[in-house]
Length: 142
Image 1 (spheres, rainbow, N blue to C red):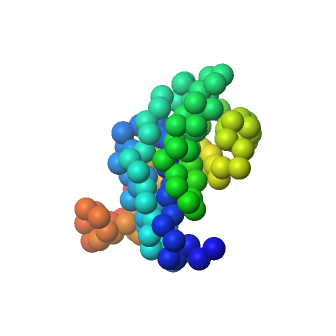
Image 2: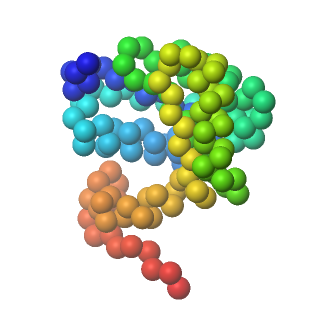
């Protein structure tokens, strides 16, 4: 499969407004870095974390997101791990999602503690991109 020419769709599920706005930009940037030029990222589906982790929650969310994927691509779940251990919660959610949608490409990503912290760590790489100023520095701890 030559994904540089094929349309690739990533339907995502997130828990917050920040993720809903930022994730498509992040996905397009990563796709460009690996040579995928025709990425389609439908507006992320917003679900409360409690709804996702409860019985039947991730299954319902992934089923809905999978209907938005045509051809190459898949479903991406991105939530904060909060106080849970990502190494335990992530595989559990992935197993449940794959059981509901066998044959679908599904990935589960958990940020420990918050997704927004990734942007603080990446400040130098964001300088001059999107609406970030050209000069950025890492946040210093007090």
